[in-house]
Length: 372
Image: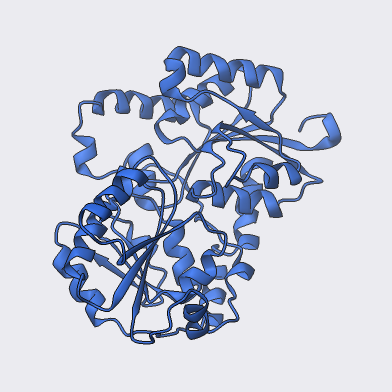
């Protein structure tokens, strides 16, 4: 333990403080609740935008935010050296890397600086198509480096662990936790629909939450909505990302502006989820999706890619795994859902707490990571 203030000092390394990211949400939930008399949590991030960002909130929690260069900007040597410099100038007891293939470089720098508690965290997985890419050899080197440099391996799902650490490697299962109090929504589904301007009780409200990126496979949603053009339904989209403009250009090209509505970055996700009849997530790959856990927390159904971990289904009968090579199957499932169906959430929240998805139970796992 560091002498300064007697606290355990931890550096969390991840990509951005944008509020659209699942990793950011998970880390911020932890920082909000962790015992600040015992732990000092700081961030190292590539991007800390002033607007639509966790920056102010993080600083309110006492977090010092270090701005760093990403791998593509700095190159492998520059990326490594900046962490040697940062960790040499700041006395951290633990480094917790959430940067997937780049975790090994970050933790190698931590090893050089004498930091004994080096934690690698895998939040997502890749399918076979990614593993066959020309970059597979480089990825393999990064994975081996990570196994060498990390003293603890953490993952949010079995697929995420297998991707980064390999098959049958021991890891600590740390599911993406929620502040379940936020997901106790008092308003009824009908009331929320009216609040969002849906006054037709026969209209189906579909929802997608996620960063606009290749991984999330959002263009598949356009194929679905083209087939639902004449049906009484609307798809709401939340998030930011590099493919957003291209996506909505395609929406306009297909004349689907009235069927696919952009809501931007939102802080009322629990209400949005409860308002919706089903959440759609056709990702090419992912770990254990935060938005899927959130959907189940408010009792909302989710149709999700069959590429996702089966651990995503927490056993409430709300998750359907569907193939992402056939939009007709998704259309058929959407046509069969009941509009304005509600599911009580009290028992759901009790079960989620037992499974360590509640923030208090989950927090104990985080604290043990840093204490040992």
